[in-house]
Image (cartoon, rainbow, N blue to C red):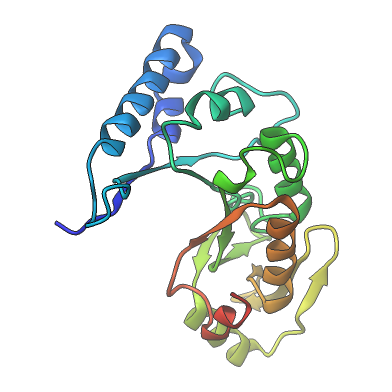
Length: 226
């Protein structure tokens, strides 16, 4: 049917159902991924005999100092490296309406890569697709919690309506602005050429690829950097 392969996003679901905290079930999950990858690699996807169907596994970044049972860690990477063609690392959604803040702090990205790979230029770095968000978030930061994702046209609309000052948060390497609506304060974090460039530099330094979430959600000139 002209497909190149499969992007498998199951890790978060397995974590939610407790599969990854049970050693036996966790091993079964890893073996399933290995079998799936090996089966796909046995199927040609084009006229070139060496071209096979590919398997990309979506994985979650580390959110704590110590690896938990549900985290995808360096041993999992080594175990699956021969069966999977790439790992899409979801280094975004760091904050939420319950905990407003930056979308993907650069220090968190560095930490996640360090836990997974060890050193820059590590053996399997080229198999990691570093997640870069092209969307942002509009969070309510007063009068309770609320808000959620915004895409490019909504970001432009907010700029035109409120004419806020765009501020740079050095610690997270992200731009943001605040505005008032119905006497409620909002904070908007949205990617810019400067923030995206910093993440591209990080990907180059580690030797990883990129995974963009998602095409069409950002601003057209974001692609000038790629």
